[in-house]
Amino acid sequence: MFSDLGLSDELLRAVIESGYVHPTPIQEQAIPIVLMGRDVLGCAQTGTGKTASFTLPMMDILAGTRAKARMPRSLILEPTRELALQVAEQFVKYGKYLNLNHALLIGGESMNDQRDVLEKGVDVLIATPGRLLDLFDRGRILMADCKLLVIDEADRMLDMGFIPDVERIVSIIPQLRQTLFFSATMAPEIRRLADAFLQNPKEITVSRPASVATTITAGVVYVQEREKREALRRLIRREQVQNALIFCNRKIDVNILYKSLKRHGFSVGELHGDMDQSARFATLNAFKANEIRLLVCSDVAARGLDIGGLSHVFNFDIPFHSEDYVHRIGRTGRAGREGHAYSIATADDGKLVQAIEKLTNAPIPRIEIEGIDPVSDEEIAEAATRKRGRNGRSMGASSGGRDSGRERGGRDRGGRSARDRDDRPRAEAAPRAAEEAPREERPRRDRDDRPRGRGRDEAPREVPPPREEFRAREERPRREEYRREEFRARGRDRDDMGPSVVGFGDSVPAFMLVPIRAKREARETVEAAENTDAAA
Image (tube, rainbow, N blue to C red; front, side, top):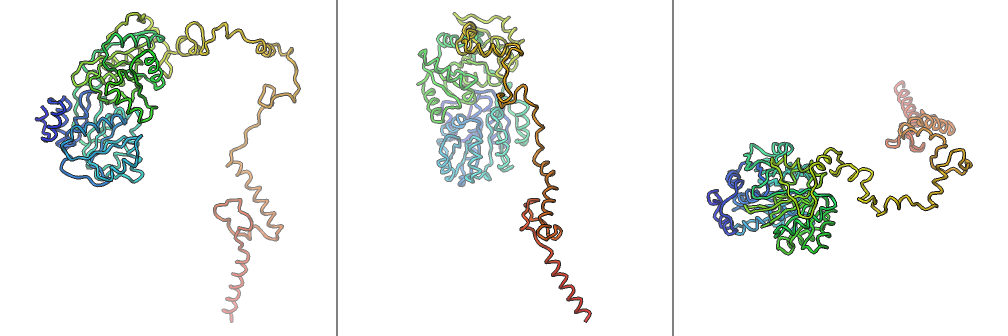
């Protein structure tokens, strides 16, 4: 029970009022270690309560003291704005009986409002790396008093390219600190980062990395590419879907699928990175309030979002990275509830499905949809032997290659058939016939009528001139000789002039050179006078 973990009475009261009595395995192991002040390296699958495993002991440690202006006492780094908002909600829910202030630094919000909150003093700072560094570079925040650092969803930080920013943030925080490092997967790169940031950490792994919760019923259906949307609609109607997330690999596909489902009468919304912040918040809040039944989204919603009672997750596209599959389906079946996760794959996705099964060490059961022709094992095996392009699709005749723009029935992207493409106007055929005629039968053109571009009979192009520095080396002796002739014409000698002015090089005008003949004659006159005086 939570009462056995050593938390304060105020925190226990808030936890019980939230409806929680028994901690999850990651919470049961991590909370006592964090209260001891040790560094923690936590690895657990999504939906196991990692957020509460560090927010609860953090509030217990920070209670009783006050923060200074612009100097937060603790920092929580999150990869996305949605995750930062969720952590802030946890602090509001569990810290209602504690006198602690928190601030949220995310993009898309007013920087002046965030600066005003920092001026009042912040105990817990929840931020994304970009906005935090922006305010730090402007001198609006100081990290000298930060004694507790949390790096959440470290593997997502690595995927989104935030690691250089995280390394810089860690460098501006005092070394005498407590660091908590949490991740759902533990790749070798994540392990190296943990070794660099943590000091003698307590490693906590409550389940095998990248494993799927046992409360999730998973399945995959293989269909033809042209039948994916129909298969999704039939699957949604067949299942008892209360609310569901539908994942696509690309943002443009999110918008296309959203419009298709809306046109077929489904209660649906969209969520992707190209939407402005206010629209994203409004859509997410409407989905949590059950005003929207289906939410088509990209992987921006796959990490850490806690949507209570999510019944289904649909993978309209098989993710390119097998770790993303674990995070996607981890949005359902949370906190011991039952969940369902179904994926729609084509023959070209066979290798991606095999990579997911290898990562999770469990096969994904095959399912079929009534009215949809399934893909045979022979088609999947044939697609696996074809070369794959950058987008993960096979480079065969049906997808990719030179005929990738043509649909079934021999039509290209413009809707023209092969017969329509061959029936060219005669005006277009005449010039082509003239070009295909033998050389001796072609009309002869004069030399002056040739195009200015580089043609077949054009003379070879001259060797390109040397680079600027080499040209300067070649012209320097000629410029020097010209100056000497100019000096002689004026009755002077080049040797009578002093050094060139620094910064002009060999292009110094003659009037800017320092004359030394007058100085030499004056010095000789003075020396002669001194010798005469000495002789006298």
